[in-house]
Image (cartoon, rainbow, N blue to C red; front, side, top):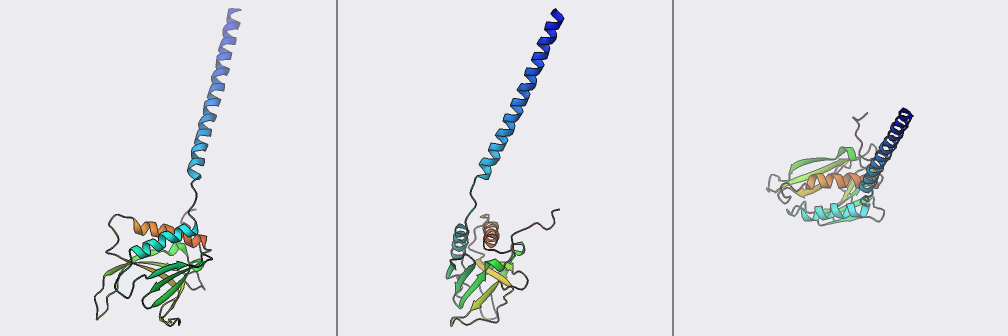
Length: 193
């Protein structure tokens, strides 16, 4: 009889241990799920918030050479056309016609044969096939046919951007999100299976 009681006791202890393991593992899984939900609960930036960041950056780090200056930046009510006013006119950038996978930055020397100018940081984004990325107008509001329409460009003063500020990566991220929200081609890693 003692052996039966021992076996029953061991069996009961084994069942309790198994139940305890199930309860602990499910509570860990629930905790992990709650943590994931808490992280995922952070709201995404709206088109208006992304625009305000891009506008603020364009204005704060604007070139001031009287040719490439960003005098004003606006977004139309549909959040699809970004207008940048410069001393020689303005450009309408069609966000819905841009491909977020083509955002690039380069160093641009705005000097010409007559005048030396400050170096610029230039962000370029290519349009989708068959669409115009931008149309630029002169001061008389006439289309300037000398400016290519296949890419949009944003200009920043290289010297004004603080070292280590991450401005380029932040503007790139904001622009890619704004393009996607405006109906353009969203960023996609074409090399991932």
